[in-house]
Image 1 (cartoon, rainbow, N blue to C red):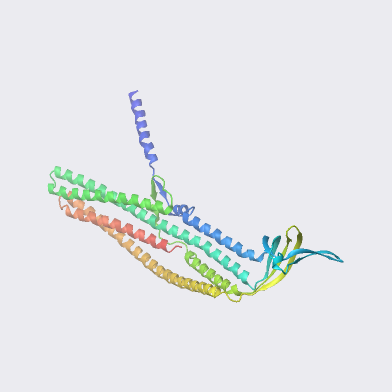
Image 2: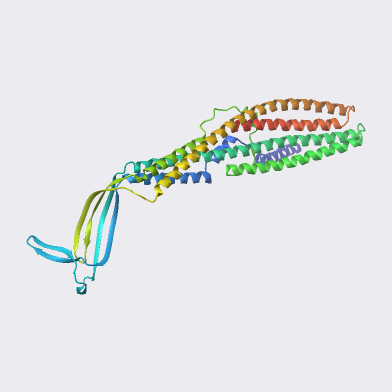
Length: 430
């Protein structure tokens, strides 16, 4: 019975110990997962969507120029003269308007008039004015829509940069944790050798200093990981789950991926340039003549007599002079187009420079990776030899400290080389 009770008690203790640790289980968060999450719903993207809806409304407004316009016109006035006079003729009675020629006999007496009509206007032909406006608004809409891809790219780039910083800090924390553990074990080992009389007491001071330095670096690395995690959460736009850790497998990737697709920034600039050109062309067409039709149907009266009314007509409007406003607007639009052309050339030059820098950084990271790996193997062997000599009483404590410092440097350089390789590969992507 005592053995059974002891056995089940041990099982319960194991369950109690396991359950909390399961709640603190680490969850690996990949870069691709955060990229997708970051572009799902962001204020920047919502603003671009709103701008896109506004650009579509401008297109609809420009297209409306092809369709007739209807309006209800109502008017009333009070003025002297043109009083209705009944005239009897053989064909019937007529009402005509007339005015007295003598002011003293009431020529200035006010007469109330009113009217109500539905008027319609139709642009029959404007020699390309409406067509140019429609093309300009459509080009602007396409350019505004392309800006959303640029915003998305900027968000993704921010996530990539913050994620690499988080991953580097997390890996550096692992290096400092191993260093702190090794320093603690070395301190205990030296203390044991001193107690056995195999090493002098003076050897304890440097190993204790090394242990404290390792603990100091460990605390700094822990704080850096927490800060980097906050940066990632800000870039993604939402908090990471509890126990989230970066994907360490990313550092082992060679960095060679698929061929880069179209540059969203260059495409957005090209579409913006096209929109500016269409806008300039629309302004150039602003002084074209307009052939239009005008019709109305309704009634008018004064004061208690009501008469039906309708009219249909065609007219031509030719702009002659507006003080140079249209010409100035067109000149400003052409200047804007020229400025965007310069920005396109600048962007293409910057992209070529970026490609060369990425190629240099990628090749340099590969060489650094090979050298850091060789340095790590050498320092590991150096540390093992120094510790073996020290344990046998054939060497001092200083070679161990030097070898340990070199090994930590090798681990750090290896990590930095891996991060540089992945960073160069991500910079090559759109």
